[in-house]
Length: 217
Image (cartoon, rainbow, N blue to C red; front, side):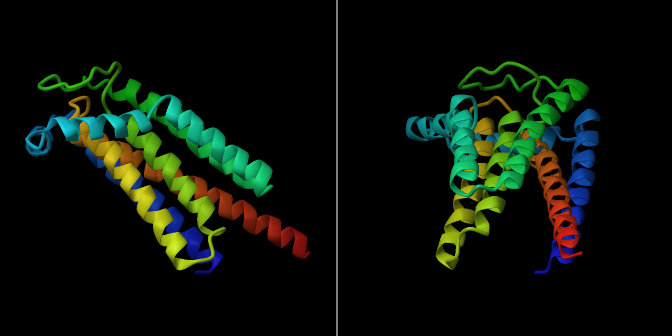
């Protein structure tokens, strides 16, 4: 896929994700996702077992706080010291930090209370969109994008994509299972973060294109 096509797809995905997030946000504001949330919560929490609870607690732990900081530092070190790619380093920082700022801003705008029906763990703050879901999508999404070009084998690339998808989905599901987020919170988090990630990649690719054109002159 050539660069112009990549730019087109990145912009289209960002726009589509932003529009979809807007639609979810309107439904949340108008309380029109109650049945959707209730049915999915009921299905997921009906699966509750002690072993599954431990697994979900693990994914929630990995998806926030210190583990995210550790993964971030490792990726920063790898990009700066091993690959010596400073523009990629800036993209990574911009996506991760921007996602946190965006999440906090959206939470303050919508001020949705967390579910209280069946909480396995406690969580503070507003509910929409899910911070864990946004952080997971941004972190593992940008890691997959940056590492893809440095992996030469089809098996390696496939493993990278599978691991990233599994981490994103399981962290999101864990928040529903543990009773601290509605499904619409998680979906909204994925869409908001997807839009931010895609537009960041678009800007990065556009910047790279202009640098290449400047060097060619």
